[in-house]
Amino acid sequence: MLKFILSCHRALAVALLLGLLPLSSQAQQFEQVGDYQIHYSAVSTSFLPQSVAEAHGIQRSPAMALLNVSVLEEVDGELRPVNAPVSGTVGEAQGRERAALNFRTLREGNTQSQVAVFRIRDDEPMHFALEVRYDRNREPAEVNFIQRFHIDR
Image (cartoon, rainbow, N blue to C red; front, side, top):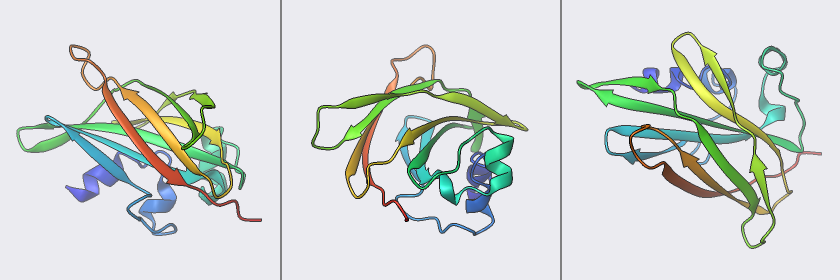
């Protein structure tokens, strides 16, 4: 099951899957909503292999990060990927300034992710407020988290 979950992030997390980046509690997290798992991870784009960044049109930079969101539904004991549009904002945890996240869909095989690139604020806790439409017949799930990034110079 873990292998399947990780494969859902394969489109952009090749480095994670190959062990080039350690999976940490901040690197990949998820929230359970009924039979759905909403997985999210945020990493500096400088950690992406050049080939992955080029293949998906992502700028590698120590000052930029990538937010990856994917949804899995449990059906008959199996997890399957779900096309789930995402919208949201990012900003300083204590500040009022918020920037909209512009998500786009990435597909590879039968897996799909919603990704957005954003500017990192060095050593500042950043608050993410997301709405994930995991089921078109239900209200979107709200996912909020705070993560601190460091710009490697």
